[in-house]
Length: 170
Image 1 (cartoon, rainbow, N blue to C red):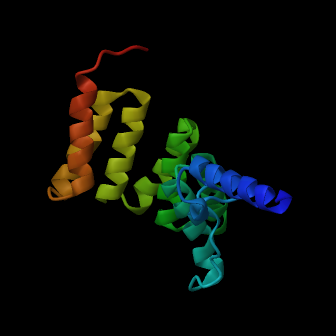
Image 2 (cartoon, rainbow, N blue to C red):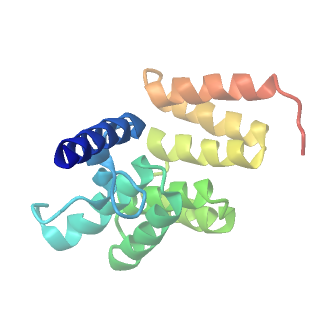
Image 3 (cartoon, one colour):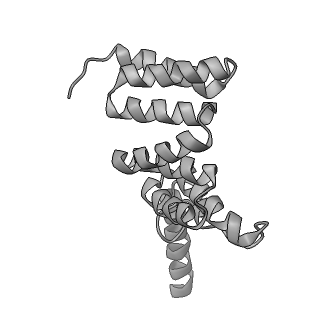
Protein backbone atom coordinates (compact mmCIF):
# COMPACT_ATOMS: atom_id res chain seq x y z
CA UNK A 1 0.00 0.00 0.00
CA UNK A 2 2.77 2.45 0.93
CA UNK A 3 4.61 1.67 -2.30
CA UNK A 4 1.46 2.24 -4.31
CA UNK A 5 0.85 5.69 -2.72
CA UNK A 6 4.49 6.62 -3.28
CA UNK A 7 4.27 5.63 -6.96
CA UNK A 8 1.01 7.63 -7.41
CA UNK A 9 2.59 10.71 -5.83
CA UNK A 10 5.61 10.44 -8.14
CA UNK A 11 3.40 10.01 -11.19
CA UNK A 12 1.31 13.07 -10.27
CA UNK A 13 4.47 15.13 -9.61
CA UNK A 14 5.94 14.13 -12.97
CA UNK A 15 2.70 15.07 -14.71
CA UNK A 16 2.56 18.48 -13.01
CA UNK A 17 6.20 19.23 -13.76
CA UNK A 18 5.80 18.49 -17.44
CA UNK A 19 2.95 20.99 -17.54
CA UNK A 20 5.31 23.76 -16.38
CA UNK A 21 7.65 23.52 -19.33
CA UNK A 22 7.17 26.06 -22.06
CA UNK A 23 8.95 25.61 -25.35
CA UNK A 24 11.38 23.09 -26.69
CA UNK A 25 14.23 22.33 -24.32
CA UNK A 26 16.36 21.00 -27.16
CA UNK A 27 16.83 24.56 -28.45
CA UNK A 28 18.37 25.87 -25.24
CA UNK A 29 22.02 25.97 -24.32
CA UNK A 30 23.86 26.33 -21.05
CA UNK A 31 24.34 30.08 -21.42
CA UNK A 32 20.78 31.06 -22.30
CA UNK A 33 21.48 31.42 -26.01
CA UNK A 34 19.78 29.19 -28.48
CA UNK A 35 21.52 25.97 -29.39
CA UNK A 36 22.40 27.34 -32.84
CA UNK A 37 24.77 29.90 -31.35
CA UNK A 38 26.79 27.13 -29.69
CA UNK A 39 26.81 24.58 -32.48
CA UNK A 40 29.85 22.60 -33.51
CA UNK A 41 31.51 24.21 -36.51
CA UNK A 42 34.18 21.58 -37.07
CA UNK A 43 32.87 20.74 -40.56
CA UNK A 44 33.39 24.28 -41.89
CA UNK A 45 35.33 24.36 -45.15
CA UNK A 46 38.70 26.09 -44.84
CA UNK A 47 38.33 25.91 -41.09
CA UNK A 48 40.62 28.79 -40.07
CA UNK A 49 39.10 31.24 -42.57
CA UNK A 50 35.42 30.42 -42.28
CA UNK A 51 35.27 29.69 -38.56
CA UNK A 52 35.28 33.30 -37.34
CA UNK A 53 32.80 34.54 -39.92
CA UNK A 54 30.47 31.58 -39.44
CA UNK A 55 30.44 32.02 -35.67
CA UNK A 56 29.95 35.78 -35.97
CA UNK A 57 27.05 35.42 -38.41
CA UNK A 58 25.31 32.98 -36.08
CA UNK A 59 25.72 35.32 -33.12
CA UNK A 60 24.41 38.27 -35.16
CA UNK A 61 21.36 36.29 -36.36
CA UNK A 62 20.71 35.30 -32.75
CA UNK A 63 20.80 39.01 -31.81
CA UNK A 64 23.86 38.49 -29.60
CA UNK A 65 25.36 41.68 -30.98
CA UNK A 66 28.08 42.04 -28.35
CA UNK A 67 29.37 38.54 -29.04
CA UNK A 68 29.09 39.09 -32.79
CA UNK A 69 31.03 42.34 -32.47
CA UNK A 70 33.85 40.64 -30.55
CA UNK A 71 34.12 37.84 -33.12
CA UNK A 72 33.93 40.21 -36.11
CA UNK A 73 36.57 42.39 -34.48
CA UNK A 74 38.90 39.39 -34.40
CA UNK A 75 37.95 38.56 -38.00
CA UNK A 76 38.94 42.00 -39.30
CA UNK A 77 42.26 41.73 -37.47
CA UNK A 78 42.96 38.34 -39.04
CA UNK A 79 41.53 39.16 -42.50
CA UNK A 80 41.73 42.94 -42.98
CA UNK A 81 40.91 42.74 -46.71
CA UNK A 82 37.66 40.77 -46.31
CA UNK A 83 34.62 43.01 -46.92
CA UNK A 84 32.26 40.46 -45.32
CA UNK A 85 34.19 40.75 -42.07
CA UNK A 86 34.09 44.55 -42.23
CA UNK A 87 30.33 44.64 -43.01
CA UNK A 88 29.64 42.39 -40.03
CA UNK A 89 31.98 44.36 -37.80
CA UNK A 90 30.33 47.65 -38.70
CA UNK A 91 26.76 46.32 -38.43
CA UNK A 92 27.37 44.72 -35.04
CA UNK A 93 29.11 47.90 -33.83
CA UNK A 94 25.99 49.84 -34.89
CA UNK A 95 23.74 47.48 -32.98
CA UNK A 96 25.63 47.97 -29.72
CA UNK A 97 25.85 51.73 -30.23
CA UNK A 98 29.57 51.88 -31.03
CA UNK A 99 29.12 54.25 -33.94
CA UNK A 100 32.74 55.38 -33.75
CA UNK A 101 33.90 51.85 -34.56
CA UNK A 102 31.17 51.40 -37.15
CA UNK A 103 32.47 54.52 -38.92
CA UNK A 104 35.97 53.02 -39.03
CA UNK A 105 34.55 49.94 -40.71
CA UNK A 106 32.47 51.93 -43.16
CA UNK A 107 35.51 54.00 -44.16
CA UNK A 108 37.38 50.78 -44.97
CA UNK A 109 34.40 49.47 -46.91
CA UNK A 110 34.12 52.72 -48.89
CA UNK A 111 37.48 51.84 -50.43
CA UNK A 112 36.62 48.15 -50.97
CA UNK A 113 32.99 48.09 -52.14
CA UNK A 114 31.75 51.67 -52.47
CA UNK A 115 28.80 51.08 -54.79
CA UNK A 116 27.46 47.81 -53.44
CA UNK A 117 23.88 47.87 -52.10
CA UNK A 118 25.00 45.96 -48.98
CA UNK A 119 27.42 48.73 -48.08
CA UNK A 120 25.01 51.56 -48.92
CA UNK A 121 22.15 49.95 -46.99
CA UNK A 122 24.32 49.35 -43.93
CA UNK A 123 25.61 52.92 -43.87
CA UNK A 124 22.06 54.21 -44.31
CA UNK A 125 20.81 51.99 -41.49
CA UNK A 126 23.64 53.24 -39.29
CA UNK A 127 22.49 56.81 -39.85
CA UNK A 128 18.91 55.74 -39.19
CA UNK A 129 19.95 54.29 -35.83
CA UNK A 130 21.68 57.56 -34.99
CA UNK A 131 18.56 59.54 -35.87
CA UNK A 132 20.06 61.24 -38.93
CA UNK A 133 17.18 60.54 -41.29
CA UNK A 134 18.43 62.83 -44.07
CA UNK A 135 21.75 60.99 -44.36
CA UNK A 136 19.96 57.63 -44.06
CA UNK A 137 17.66 58.55 -46.95
CA UNK A 138 20.60 59.65 -49.10
CA UNK A 139 22.31 56.25 -48.71
CA UNK A 140 19.10 54.25 -49.15
CA UNK A 141 18.38 56.12 -52.39
CA UNK A 142 21.93 55.43 -53.62
CA UNK A 143 21.35 51.74 -52.88
CA UNK A 144 18.05 51.93 -54.77
CA UNK A 145 19.81 53.50 -57.78
CA UNK A 146 22.37 50.67 -57.81
CA UNK A 147 19.76 47.89 -57.48
CA UNK A 148 16.09 48.92 -57.66
CA UNK A 149 14.95 45.32 -57.03
CA UNK A 150 16.87 44.88 -53.76
CA UNK A 151 14.41 43.82 -51.05
CA UNK A 152 16.60 45.12 -48.23
CA UNK A 153 16.62 48.57 -49.80
CA UNK A 154 12.84 48.50 -50.16
CA UNK A 155 12.48 47.47 -46.51
CA UNK A 156 14.87 50.20 -45.38
CA UNK A 157 13.00 52.87 -47.32
CA UNK A 158 9.75 51.69 -45.74
CA UNK A 159 11.39 51.76 -42.31
CA UNK A 160 12.56 55.29 -43.02
CA UNK A 161 9.04 56.34 -44.04
CA UNK A 162 7.69 54.90 -40.78
CA UNK A 163 10.44 56.64 -38.78
CA UNK A 164 9.54 60.03 -40.22
CA UNK A 165 5.96 59.72 -38.93
CA UNK A 166 7.06 59.37 -35.29
CA UNK A 167 8.00 62.38 -33.19
CA UNK A 168 11.64 62.86 -32.26
CA UNK A 169 11.89 62.17 -28.54
CA UNK A 170 15.57 62.86 -28.14
